[in-house]
Amino acid sequence: MDTFRSEDEQVQALRKWWSENGASTVVTVCVALAVVFGWRGWQNQQQAKLDAAAFAYQNLLEAVAVAEQQPDDIKIASAVHLADTIKQDFGNTGYAHFAALFKARQAVADEDYSSAEAELRWVLEHAPTPQLQAIAELRLARVLYAAGDASQALELLQNTSVDAEADVVFVPQRAELAGDIYMSQGDYESAYDSYLLAQTSAVSAGVTVPPMLNTKLSYAKSYR
Image (cartoon, rainbow, N blue to C red):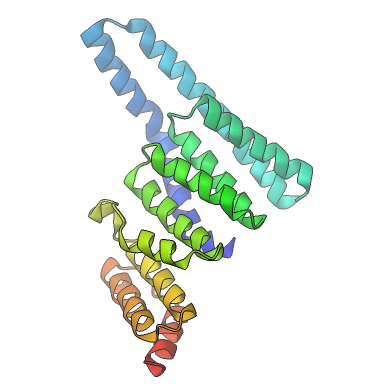
């Protein structure tokens, strides 16, 4: 779970944005459709659906909080069930993306990497925002690596399609993970290059450079 902490902070920010702006965005689209096509009822229907999705997601957050404070199989299963319901009933909303991210995180905790991979690929296949795409890709690379597929993890890290502006804060994390993979393969030259990219891109993005990254960089340099 610790490996996902930095992305979780970004997910929290996206959740806050969606809570504050998701409804207004949908309302704007609804109004445009009502004016052009005269579908006045469509606006009310979509708003009601979004309200229901928000309510379901709030229930999920509460269930997750309870499961984290008092972890047991029943509480965790209840949270997973709520996440499944959100994906099934509100799959075209941002709430479904967050529900899938939760399911993926829980699957990683259970060392069920195939299920985690499926959830993260679901997010990527359902039109996430650029920031969520970057988070899902990074987590998927971690899952693939943990599952023993280092080559596919590296390919994903090196061939992201995330918008450059949205991706800038994720470059250091992707580069560091690539460095970890190269280190595990004994490719110290590539590991050093990746760690150096992680360090320089973090500085450029105004992101704090973790002390461990500097340690990794020094270690890889000593074996070049």
